[in-house]
Image (tube, rainbow, N blue to C red; front, side):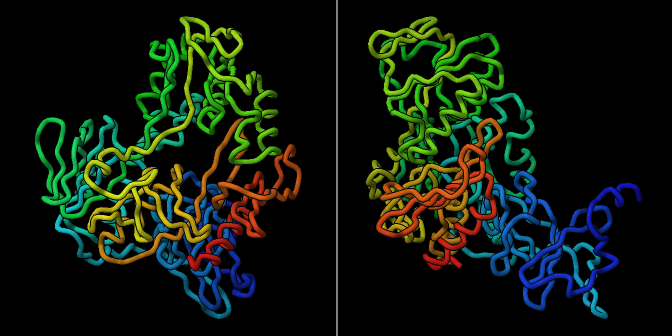
Length: 506
């Protein structure tokens, strides 16, 4: 009884007047000690879990669009009728409750059992090459859609699919335990009939005979194939680049090596002012290390976020003790110091390199698939070879918002493409029209970005960047191509929904 009283809001089992909720609004309450969100759409009422199943974001602060609800933190999207996950980064559905309307009152009753998916027909077998965001999301979506054939994920990584964005954020900062990192426990893959082949390298794809050749000489046949090989860090090519205290952050193993090195280090030099580089800088400051950042640009992230936001990010880091050396490059790495242009030397016993990545497309190119700065796919994420799909960092797809072919290296994009590719492997012919979304969090400040603006004519700023309350619109030829927000989560969701309407996504 005490637990139920501790849950805020009305007891929805006792009921609330139906006129208390306007169309398109929601109220948070509880049923049996669980937080429940009651939503009205027209004359229908839906009762779902109140917290996003990704990181627990408050859905009461989210956005209702049609018969969906979106999380304000990371833009996961759920179906109001069934609680099903429609779009990543959430992987689990929301719980749902039965709703009854009587005598002008809305009562939320017992929790509903989830109906099993109807059997879905597709390839005789599916092989997914890559165990990252896109590959894992595809495998889960195939099962959620009712596909019962064999699914094999082949990954060169020794670890089962994990929460990669956390590696440069809370996990590296020492604020996230090991158990937070796997996307699923090991038994999940067994119970869902998903075979994981970890630490396994594919050396060739043969589209004609439909098999993959592994480094040990064996082959793996496939009927349907998803390429989700991701990207590889660009390497620094200067004297000393191969010293043991020089690190790159891409995998869980990389992150653990950095954490081990940070235990004995005092001074860190980060090469590159990319999102990864700056998140690493913030995380290692959280561990109490002295951090210097060397980058060739005049201000951090200017190419992506513009001058004003780039300057803000620099000030944010400097207030937290980071020292920048901008407009400069590294020329040599020594045992305990790094030399930059003009012979300046910076003491460092740990070096982190974050100078971008390149898509891992060598296998696709050798197999004869069409490539051009990525694996070329159509609107259904199918490559130039029928039955072979690509998703995530390697996929270059026709973007309906800009009219260009684009390739985006963001976690949520990869997951959503994995979901769409999986549905299309089952013959659903679902065009990929999702609006790109990513977020970064540094020193507790979350920056959300929706859209894609490689170039812009002007940036319209509303609000106060320094106060962490702002909205920036990136425009070209009078069109809004991207929206960046700080402290305005709902506006970020609204911008995403408006862009979806433009491309016919909703």
